[in-house]
Image (cartoon, rainbow, N blue to C red; front, side, top):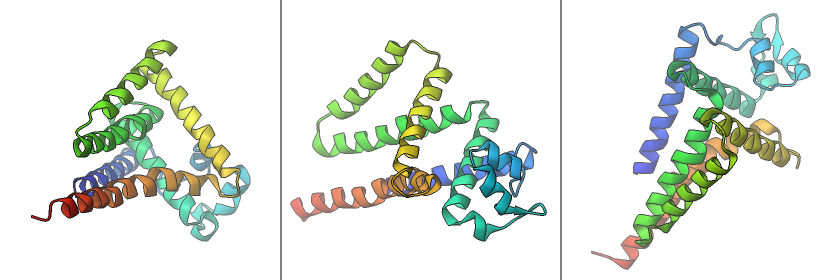
Length: 191
């Protein structure tokens, strides 16, 4: 239940970030053709999505719509906090979410080496690369984006792979895995 609550909080934070970016004029709503190209949409697709300054959501597609609005939310949070878009994504997906999962796993197993090991590896990589926090986050983000693009090479569009890895899997990790861990606990202790 806590994991699902956290997923909702992150979702509302993204929605607030998106709203803030739009209300302050940092992000057009609906997106302009130039903003979608800046966020990585191919020019040919951007030309078919926009017709006379209007979005053709059928041409954009379900996963593209989710992908670009979530990315807009992260960019809005970046504008709100003064942090870079890449740093916010790395903090959420490579530090905060894995730490929450590992803390949950450690609490179920009474074995605290998972979270300690993860933080140690994360800090070791940071200190070995000797980069600023922003440069380190940018390098990690670029590697993760390259991985998602390579997974998209198997026939799935990049936006679908991005939505699956950044939205569906975290929600599944929080809700399904939490329910399975709690179910095992209830079976072993029926009272």
